[in-house]
Image (cartoon, rainbow, N blue to C red; front, side, top):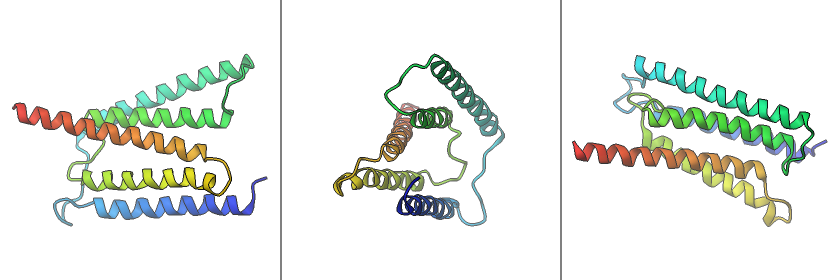
Length: 172
């Protein structure tokens, strides 16, 4: 059983993320003023559906592979909990990366820069949360390192897409 401090820290972390998400949504909501809200057009909705299917297929295939590994009783260097978390994040990342590169991740009229700043802030918080226990004599938090890794991949894709879009705009 986990300690009370661990459970309290986990709950506080979830509350912090939830409150941060609400604040970020309010900040990033209006690029052109309060009268116009960001929205997805029909093309974006169709492509996001395809991206979701893509992520779901990846999730399903990786879980089937994991079932096979478990059935064969093959020992892996990480616990099953971490592996299932990695599979889950990989499927979400596939959805997000496909959405970024097809211009459907951000809504029309949404402030991309605000979200990038929020994601950078989340990366820094996760780095601190991963390393802080080690400073106090404990172990590095693997979960926070995984979240940091996946958020860094997300940021790298957003920046790479922005660079490609800028080059394309300059060539035209």
